[in-house]
Image 1 (cartoon, rainbow, N blue to C red):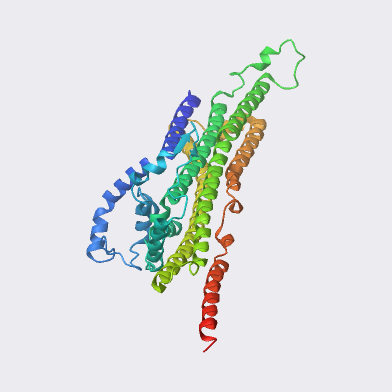
Image 2: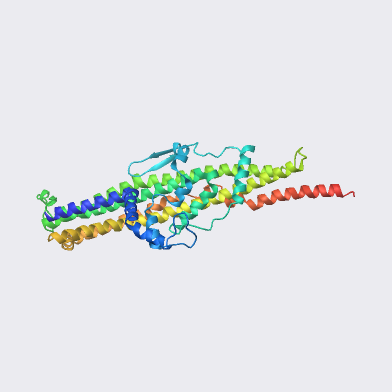
Length: 444
């Protein structure tokens, strides 16, 4: 009866932990609202005496009570990056070209048509690029930041703010991929932790040497060198741990790993196509810039205007590629960082649940978890340790999918050789100026 009660309490706690971790946002939003309600009198008094600035008046250095700010920030629904990206309704076009699949874990397929970047650099597109480039090169550098935000979130928001008009689609996709890949890692740690915990609970409940009577089925066989109770206990422990390892193997290699690799590969392929199109525009702009002085145009103002137009296009496209790669680096860092938190904190949460439920049960009954584990014997301990090792190896390799995102697959900023291209353009203009100077002034 005690074992059954322990199992009910523990499985209930584990189910609650799984629900909270998998739901992720909703519970913390509720906690955030409750936290804000409870701390409202404190925050109001601090605002009155000027320790916390009023809304809309936060200045650089007005940190306020940092613990309060960080905690309140952690419970907010929107990050700085998501606020910079804008409402989800702005990305209906992008969402219409994304197909999501999967049951336990999710993967996406990015269909052709996602990109809003025109195929060719027409005069109308060049004018739009010129306007965007002029706005970028006269953009004021904002040196303020929300002190309760994570740095990478604030940095990503600044990049989006500067390039949203031109590249919002790629920023949206990278951010969505980041959230999906982190969610897959979180689910993997939840399921693996639940399997490990369930294996322990089942052995505590039923591994008593009688639930699975294999010894009795071998009566016609020569007597074994161990007792019936010990033999049945070993077989039960072996069967339960092997089943747990098999389920983890199936989850990892059949569901998780292919889906995560597909997500990383889809992101890499999209970046390759996107940056290749920008590179086409970049090469077109460079060719147009070199040919400004060629042709029948004699109006010096038109020639100067065209030179400025294509020069701005070259710099603007180069800066877009540079900051897109910076945003990709930011996203990959967040995927790895957040995943490392899940790999550590989720198993720790389940471990706390096990000991918490055990302590709760011990307070009302004579149940003793330590004694029960000793009764299971050294064979179960060894098998369970091996299961933990397998569990750790799976989690250690959970981010190997990031190898699919290879910078060498796409046109990078460094491969555009912006300095060399601008040098060729300026050199061409200098050659033309030198030619006309010598021709006009040579005979005087």
